[in-house]
Image (cartoon, rainbow, N blue to C red):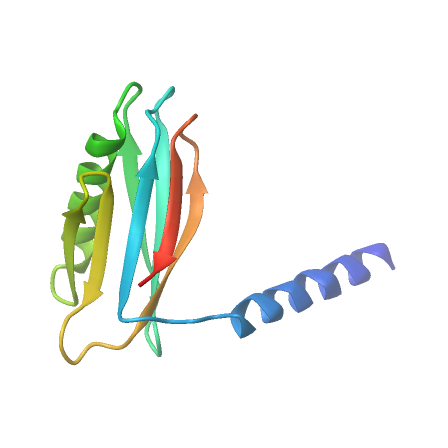
Length: 124
């Protein structure tokens, strides 16, 4: 019976998370701190009505926040080149904006294994 309750709770949480979905045409990725370990940042790009795109960014140990922003920008740009514009802003931020005719989208931080590097996704 415990497994059934657990599955029900997981399903309800997943439904609640999608109910809070607030797609936008533009997002900001804020990179703060320096990497005290090597790791990965995993971001999901979820267009309304489309398939999600998982973007994995490898971050070397000792990378500054400005350099992390460059790595994030380059990885997103490579994966989204036909559907979004991706650029740096304020050195440590990355702006992701849909191209004309593309659907609004969500950015979701799936994982960040880099110690002392904070990644925040903000709807613009």
